[in-house]
Length: 424
Image (cartoon, rainbow, N blue to C red):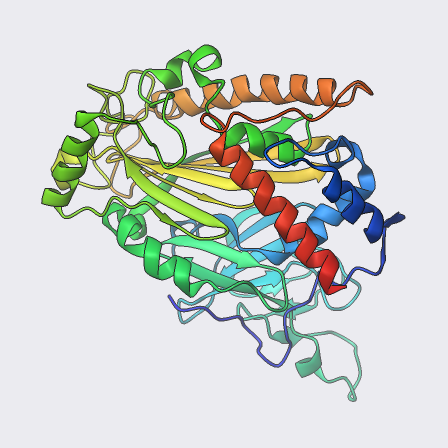
């Protein structure tokens, strides 16, 4: 699908318009804190603890980039909608009568009530539960009882949000002018297309509250320095010793994997931009899927190429998500800020649309590896937060080899924050 946002007469809200003071913290002070960070080191403590910097992050970081929020198959037919929260923002994605996706702020234009509760559903029209203002699926205001003859309903449609669908993955951006998306689409679509997300379904979803700042959650998610010791189940299939774009060093098996993928017509990558990166990589010897034992847990494959033995396609997007797509299923991870020391981790598993639960897959087996991994990571980042809260915390150096992607994340964060401060 091409990009668009509904109700073009109403431009998207710009959530980046913070004043010089951000919740009491001066932007010059944030800039000075950024300047304290030594290259290749972590951030000063305030970036993981200060409520004002949490507010800054929402507006300067999350509201100004593309966010992976779900998949087309979560809205399977016209009239479907997906209601979710991102930070403090209620978001609504709809599929209108023509089958097109649209995204809106889930906020009634009357007195601001949230229109749809968090979850998925289907409706001919969207009705605010407070005073029954009623909206079409394309965001137009259809009915506003007792508002008088001089009321212009055309001025009060839902406020739209930019939305993109890339081979079945849904991205939104809350900025008035979002970053370019076309380069990401052109580079990444050929890698994702063989996984046929349009022929999938959501099999399972979980949420986990982690008592840690979202940046600590994502720094943990961007490195595997800790994996061999703290994720024994993941280490059975995942090449925990690799770095960067899964650089194994001199390894003939990697060449064999790449040659095999080329013979199957599957792009490998890597492809990379400022806020995204992707690569198909080889799993450990004998592993066919990213599962507890390395074997497929869904008998109906999403990608039948190579009989599903195609490694894993990993892609990540700053600031908050990564996914792994193997032959039999797809796993999505998203870390969304809830507070200075609180993050919600949303995990989703996709399988082929014709796969039958209890016949072709078992939910517990499907979700076992990443549920274990997420719980282990929760304990790690909560412990990390407690240590960072100490007045004795001084940012240390990352491992250039083992934490290359954590460095990349923090570098991106600092550059994006400085860009925002410079634009005020």
